[in-house]
View 1: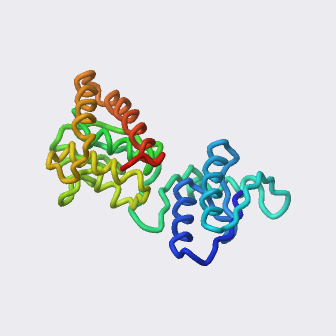
View 2: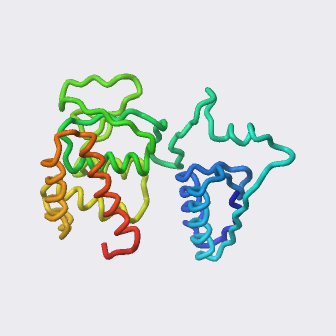
Length: 242
């Protein structure tokens, strides 16, 4: 359980904290009291959030709790379940698109940088239980509930000047600052227009091309590409120069 009190200023802090709570899957017990299942990962999520709240002049307390009266274990567990009794996993934000957890995401076979990066983004920030399917570039008719990305006439693809990775960041309202340089990098490699002038582009493009040359299996390419984008994201999240 996280119990917090926020200062009246800065104004953006309340919205930022709410988005973070929703992103980690916390459920509100009361206005300033939030719950997560008792796991090491949940404790880490709440601990980072407590540090951020306190750095802005607020107060936060983390407790391990067992309800004795007023709420049963089943009642607590139901907070993470939908009306059908299954884990809901809906990406819950106050803005941006929402998808059911465990959606099948379809993309073109022969994945390259934008599809590798987009699949990494989907699994890390949008749908942690995402399943990926590979199809011909055109003519594929999605089954019910499937979403297409980086495909002709897909649900999430290039829009205007944006590559698919940028489209996903924008439409799902992902506001993590470390995603900005990553999106710029993916754009420069994929679109080849030098829009952002990312100095890393040629080197990362070589690594991505090596992944493609190393295997023709698209699932393996996503796995290897995911490790690359994990490393790049952690670099910028740790405060490296953007």
